[in-house]
Length: 207
Ligand SMILES: [Fe+2]
Picture 1: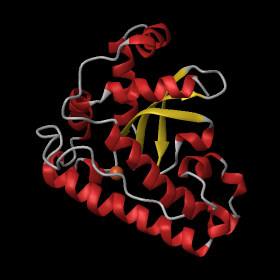
Picture 2 (picture 1 turned 120 degrees about the vertical axis):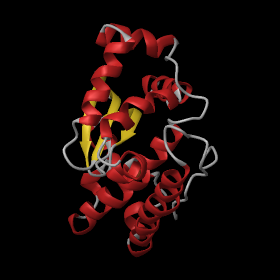
Picture 3 (picture 1 turned 45 degrees about the horizontal axis):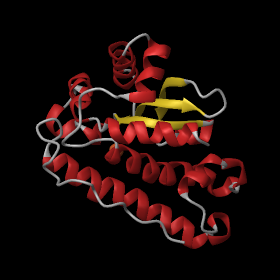
Picture 4 (picture 1 turned 60 degrees about the vertical axis):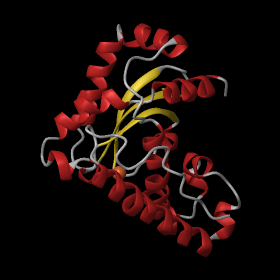
């Protein structure tokens, strides 16, 4: 099986003014595409390792991957997987606040939506080097958590389900924001697709 690039669910300029069209175009059509191309090369050379599994299943069971290619799968497979999640949890019609069960869990865990948002923003801004700030569900305890992940490490590799992922690699913001990562992070909340985040939460709870 060869993995495919999910279609971007909006136009390149749809996330403006938060994320400019050129950044979205390069990020999606060059960076995301390159992770996918590199992953598919690994798949073609090691078909028995992948065997039709979803990328989430592969990254959730890293110990099944031969050590000779494990780090490459983490890097390229994680790059593919994290970006799939990132684009889908943004929307030109996003923003606002989550509702329903997810909202209840956020209030219970963090005290309020604003307090969760602040904590997630701090995590994303504070990533040293390249990585992500994430709101996740722990698969065992079913508790919400805010974590930082480095490089292209995937939350599913450490027993967590990604609910909301914020890319803070420089390629995600540098053209428009240069060194001002905090501005990018603060603004991104106005394009968060909470419907998608709620869907991920409901699905993760049902597993
Ligand atoms: Fe990225």
